[in-house]
Amino acid sequence: MPVARTHCVGLVGVTGRLVEVEADVGPGIAGTHFIGLLDTAISEARGRVRSALINSRFAWPDARVTVSLFPATLPKRGSIFDLAIAIAVLGAAGAVPAQRIAAPTFLGELGLDGRVRPIRGVLPAALAAAEAGVRTVVVPALNAAEAALVPDLTVVPVATLAELVGWLRSGDLHRLPVVADAASLSQDAEHAEHAERGEHPEHGEHAGHAGNGRNGRNGRRAEDALRPFGPYGGGRAAPGPDLCDVAGQPMGRKALEVCAAGGHNLWMLGPPGSGKTMLAERLPTLLPPLDQESALEVSAIHSVAGTLPPGRPLLTRPPFMAPHHSATMAAVVGGGSGGVVRPGTVSLAHRGVLFLDEAPEFATTVLDSLRQPLESGTVTIARAVGAVTFPARFMLVLAANPCPCGLQGTVGHPCKCTPAGRRRYLDRLSGPLLDRVDVKVKIGRATRAELLADRHFVETSATVAERVRLARERAARRLAGTPWRTNAEVSSSALHRDFRLPDAAMAPLHRGLDVGTLSARGLDRVLRISWTIADLTCKDRPGQAETSAALALWLGVD
Image (cartoon, rainbow, N blue to C red; front, side):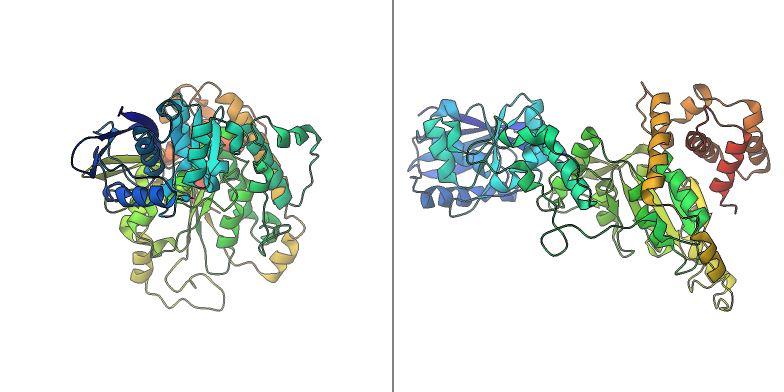
C-alpha cells in the first residue's frame, strides 16, 4: 500500500513548526514502530491510537505499521500528534482517501474510546500552520474557538474520530461545523469585555457575523464561546477594582499613572495596610486594551501554559500575575522536567503586570533572575536537549515593608527590629535589581484627616486611563517607525541621539551624575520617565521641570 502523509505541528516553547506525519502499512512481522526523536508521550501513542481505532469500529492493520515524524531532528513532545498519527494510519490502510488527508493539519489527543480530547498550545500551533501555508486545521471541539483566532484559516472542530473519518470519506465540509473567522471572534471578545464592565454597546454593525459563511449549519455561535460568566456561573461579572478606592495616597496614584503611561517598573515601600497591594491591583485598570497582535501573542503563551480562562480564548486585557513569595525560580522564570519546558510567571505576565508582594521574602536567586528579562524582554531556558525562548516584556511592581515587623516609621508603634535586621531585610533587593526599577515611591499610613481630604481628589480608573491613553498615543506618534511601543522600551542610544534633550533640561541629571547619586543606567531610566511626564502634560519634549520630577521619582524622594 502507498505511504500516506498528513501534517501536525510540533511546539518548542511558544513557537510551532510543521511536522509531516507519514504512515506505511507493509509486509513483515505485525507491529507498530514510531521513529522521529519522540518523547514518552508520543511513544505511548501507539496504545492510545490503536484502542481509539478499534473502539471506533475501524480495523487495525494486521501488518507492519511504521509511523515517521519529519523532520527527525526536531524534538517532538506531547499528545498533540495522536490525531494525525491515527489519520495517517487509516490513510495508509486505505480506510480514508490519502489525497484528502494530505492538505489539512490535524491536532488533538485521542481517548481510548475514540473521543478527541482538548490539548494545550492549539493557538500557537494554528499560527504556525497558517504561516506554513496550511488553509485547513482540524482540532478538538473544545479548542475550536481558540484556533479560530488565526486569520485566513478554516477550523474544523471534531468530537470523535468516527465523526472525522465520516467527513474525510465524504469530503462534504457541511457534515461538520466550521468555526467563525478571527475577525468575528475578536469583535465578540470586545462585546464580552463591555459586558463584564456593565456596558451595552450597539450590536447593529456586527449583527451579521453570526451568519458568517464559514459557519457550518451545526456550528456553535462564536459569541456563545466568548460569553462572559459571573462568579456564580451566569449573569454580569462583579465590579472590578477601581483607582478611586485608594484614598490618602495621592503620590502613589500619581506614580501609578506615570508607570501606566510609559510602561515603567515600580517599587513601593511602606508599612502594612498602607495601600501598596491595592495600588498594584489597580494598575491593570489604567492600561489600554491589547491590540490584535499583542492579544494573540499573550493568548498563545497562556495556551501553552494551559491557563486560558474557560470559554475565553482571546485575552484582550493586560494580564496581572502575583506569585506567592514561596515560588521557585522554575515557577517564576519557567522550566520543567522530562524535556518539557513551560513558561513561567514572567512570561504569563507578558504585556501586563508582574506584582511581587512582600518582595524581600522572595528567594534572592528568584529576584536576581528577573534582571535579564527586564532588560531584554525575553527569557531563555537552556536544557541539555536545547534552549527555549519565551517573551517576557512585563511591568514589574515590587512592594516591601520597611523592616521585618513593618512598623518602622509608624506613629505609636515602635519598631522592634535591630538596625542590622532592617538592613539585611532590604538588602535582599539587590542594587542591580533596584537600578532597573524606574519609579520608587514611599507609601505611608494615611491619617483620618488625610483620608477625608483626599476623598475630594480621587479619580476613577476610567478618568486616569483616558490620560494614559492620550499619553501613549503621543509616544506612539513620536516612536512611529521604531521597534518600540512605550517610553520604557526606548534604547539608550536613541535617547542620547534621536531624543537628546537640551543642556538646560539635563542640568539636574548632570548634577546627579557628578555627586554619584545617579548611575549611567539610572540616567537612561530618568530620561524615559521625563518623556512620559511630558506626554502626560501634553508637552512636545521634557524641560527642566520634567527631568527634576523624573529624578525625584527614580530616587524615591517625597
